[in-house]
Length: 101
Image (cartoon, rainbow, N blue to C red; front, top):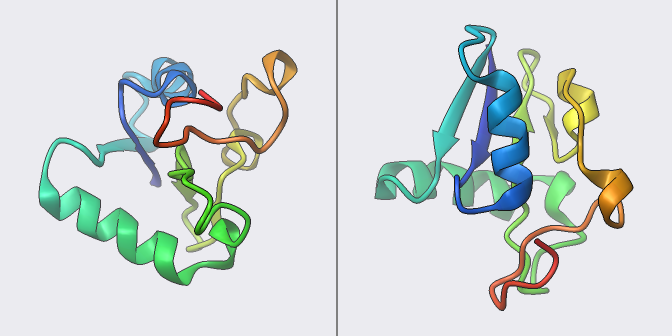
């Protein structure tokens, strides 16, 4: 099962969530729904190289995907999904100030 970390209020996460709805191969984890989810995501974000370009920039780094082999990626295509990259710069992420969403 592929884990997808995100928040429904994030447009990119919402785009991904609509693609996986009802698909048992994916689990959407809303990091804002419970502190346990936020801690799980924060641990990933603080220690994984997939977040090197967003740490310290105000970006959150969602959506985030943990593939079945444990690989962590921020690219929906790596998880077999489509991204909104044609609508904005690839790899950008939601920032605390609301830009990049």
